[in-house]
Image (tube, rainbow, N blue to C red; front, side, top):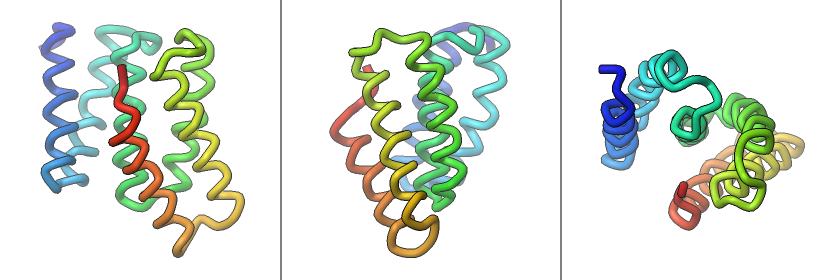
Length: 130
C-alpha cells in the first residue's frame, strides 16, 4: 500500500471521484492519502505537493475558500522552494494562491466565494498539473 504507484493510483481515484460528482468523497480520499504520501515519499516529493494541491482544490470547490487560500499559500511557499520556478506546476500553485488571496481580500462569502470556486475550476481545466 505504500508503493509510489499505489499512492499515485489513489490520487487518481480521488481526482476522478471528485470529477464524477462526489467532491466530499474526493476530499476524504485526499485527506487519507496525504499522510501516507508524506510518510512514504516525504513532504517535499512532487507527488506529495500534487496531492496537497488537489486537496486544496476540492476544499475550495466545496466552498471553504479561506481554508483553500491558506493551503495554497502554504503550498506556494513550498513550490517556490522545491520546484523549478517556471514549471507548470509551480506557476499554477503561485497563481491559485495569489488569486484566492485577492478574492479573500474582497470578501470570503457570497458571490466572491462562488467566483473564486469558479476560477479554480476554470484553471484546473486549463492548467493541468505536469
